[in-house]
Image (cartoon, rainbow, N blue to C red; front, side, top):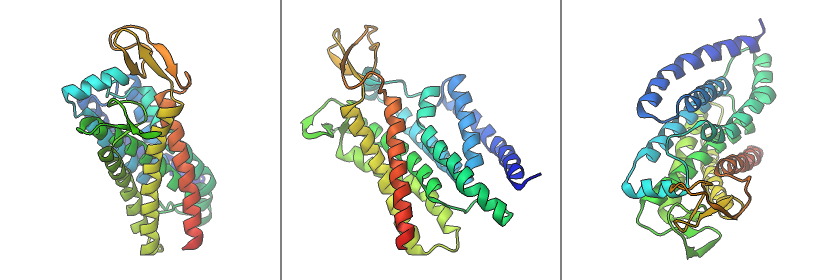
Length: 298
């Protein structure tokens, strides 16, 4: 049996073992829809563990923190969510849009970097890092940053301003709307994912402290930038609709009132889920380039 097959079998076994108890928590808290969201989430979680236990921890941190903060419901927040977007319980499409970029970078990491490494070294080192795994972390940091920006921005008393025109005030929940508190929360959301990557670096004895600090700061920056790119795309290319009955702008083709909306601006094919994917890919590419530059300098 080759060392790669041995690794895959072991990782699959432990991935199932560690993820199985989480299903009870997810079902209990109703964080994912049944059965699509649950099955998709379980598959993604196991595949992510196979890529890297540290990346799996980051995925877990993103999913739990973003889901719990989304579940913190107030009458005002419920109304805004109903006006603009989907329910806070994530469905299969939302799960995929929030995990595919990281998983894509992770699979590239396995095939290009990790498998050749373990074949050469003859052992499984989960501390092995490369630009591609860094990009995977940045993608998750983007999703966490975006979620925290949105949820805190909706919950605060401040009035959002359009990211493409900061002088223009927009209703809460508007795609492309940003607030100072929301952006600050986005930095914290990105930092949570960066801390898990920092833990991986701390356990790697051959990396200097200054190297760790710079990589941590840049990863937090890349994730936050990705969250802002998400807002920018929401304000410029995302498809938005208008309900004549309620006289409201929304992301929904069928508004909460039950009436069909009319296309307003952007591109019909560019949904919020597509924006989530593209912003995370941009962030990952930025992180990949940044990691390589930092490696060259330090």
